[in-house]
Image (cartoon, rainbow, N blue to C red; front, side, top):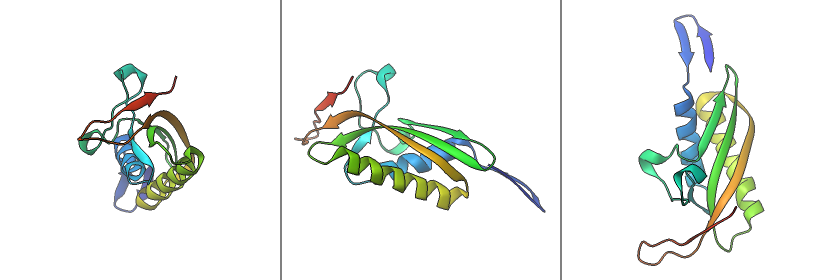
Length: 126
């Protein structure tokens, strides 16, 4: 985003938008984690510094498009989780950046089963 103001120009980098989208995604109930994609092998639950994993953005001067690759928790209706995810990410990015989010695309790449002593079983979807 570029905004002309009397004192200069404000630009919001793609990385900032990716971080905001990733954090909003991880805060969505039913999302077990972000997926690094097929190129990184097995889907991994990522958080913290890796919050941008599984997030791709295209940022223009006034608009942004966001693609998310996620792992959902088993037993929760995927369509409901994804709709809430889209709403949460759109709201977070628009509120924090002032950009208009034109689309939030979600690709469910795995299902996480119950965790037992820090182990997570993930079923990959091809």
